[in-house]
Length: 433
Image 1: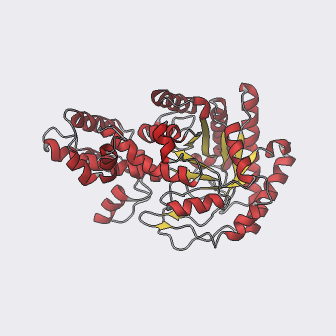
Image 2: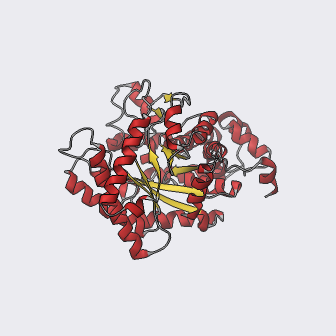
Image 3: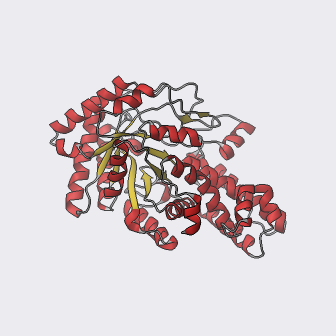
């Protein structure tokens, strides 16, 4: 974890540096992230979440070792040095099994953490903030810390078994819901310095009581609420003034903050977050939202180019699959009629991301790309529906292919994060590379 620790140490020394965490399992999104690393000559942090990847396969069908191999394969494809790749586990705790009693859920969470560490994941977010069946709501700091320590002990034992660099940890009790808020948001309450201080104090005490005092020195960050979030169609923007006292609190501590749900924040807001010691920025749905924008645009370009007969009808296939298998979106999009259609297709929480691995959707995407590869893309159509990518094609920066257009659309997001974290190389250096 020397790459990550170096970034944290430089930040604590006063440099406005940080790192963004790519939370996605889509191959084109991950390829975009790795290409961003090549563009910037930087390390890249890629994290799998507990519902995406776990010992049962998660919604991607991948176990931790499978995800590792998958990412390493993409790194080899684009020529990214695996030594500069950091793998993390996000929301590792009982979240995927929270409908079960705590003992049962924590046992499965422990198995999952063990598999992650043995597969080479070394940034471990210990997230036990959610209540399980029969638990009070919310959980106390002490219970959250005790469960985090339980999982940390399992992680440490797994690391000692396999060797390699020691894991580093992220803790916290005020953790935003993975994937964005389910309800319409108003103004958010920023975590108070007192609450953050209590969380940190309780975790230190509980870890020490569990014989993990030395391990706690590898806790590099804690998750708090800086006042950023998004719901289906609205973004709560970062207000640095409201988080001023929270930011000041962490200056006297050896760790930094990790900010979740930073998707859709402006360049200015992301930069301010890093400067205010939210040195780890998580992004997930914002990346697949950009992916969906590009694929929907290509769906239109394809039908305009070749007509309806023989087209992939990717958007229609997605709609059909989501209607036939609604489990991933139905609990979130309760509005009836046309509003539900708008939510399914265009919500910022982007529940479509669960459906890209579906065989019917994969087949439609492959047909889309194959159809667009049969003849040169009409740049007038690309300019109509993907204007920024058309400019980059004209400048010779990207190839005029469907895959390149999608990846570059996703990289609009990664470039914003790279700039905010101080990782982006100046344009003249990128051209020379």
